Length: 467
Image (tube, rainbow, N blue to C red):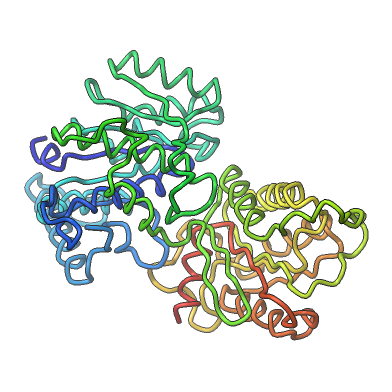
């Protein structure tokens, strides 16, 4: 237990935004490590443990916002592996696979081991699933705990109601440790407050900090204000636990370290825009109902045209059964979801965008692909998913179902199915060049493509772009 206490951990749970919130906290606290702008550092190393990864498993275990090097990852991997085998032998048990924990649990043990050996000053630990029974919930005395926005997810493990899910998330609260959350639904808030009383925890609800209206967040989507506001309070509570003074009128008056951390945070695959010739890729790894809706709202805010001058009147909205008018700047959807209710997520995406953009034709084109990275060489090893049905993937079963579902939503949209992410990206580039269905593209502006639906898609997509 003493080793855990040395980590001075910040523990974060939630359904939506826990990764982004963790990244905000890490970015803020890293501003207090040695740098030209910090001659009197408070910390040397800040650990950040998150899941899942996008491209490389090393991304899960970070120090000062950088993934472990390949050398350090291999070192701590085999040290952890060997210690587990030694422990099994000492108990007189076999050292085969049964002596090893599951994938996520192994990486969690490895992360704690790495942070101990690297002597990090603080570790920000993101829960995997839930909280009460999550394998990260072995930290006896965190400096502060945080619970981000709650929604319905992982129902097989956590239950199908928001009350059940809130009970699990509240499991990270520890007696005597301050806890913070964001505004929740009344049912979820009630459970969190009752659990806080049971655990003798002071729970505070964090509203959006108005100061953020004047700060350009590194994660720029409007909904990130909630995550950033929570991160501000978590970082400040942690600093206060170390008797570090904060300026008067905090949090209205933020230290420069906080502002730099909020502006400089980078979290690939979350509300990220990458550009190449003729295409603006809008990338978000949303994969739950709520996160897909947030991704749609973010994309809408990025592509929504400015309001017309008062003297101009917009053309009447077309009927859902008519084809959309020719556009010189197509809007394209690149979507994959292999294990959840993919049509439901796609419909939620369509509904949110249609409402936000006031059009029944939010996309001119859509392409549905599998989570296979490359057509010829298959998956990158770090991106193999053990939860998918290989036969269904090969048969494009889910993708064909998505094509049919989207066709019912918007008969005027050009829809394509591809067997790999690489082929889907190539198809979008073809549209942007004016190939085949995309003959109207390339004359003005840039094609806007939303890439969303799953972490595996975004990870593979970034790998294809990187390659």
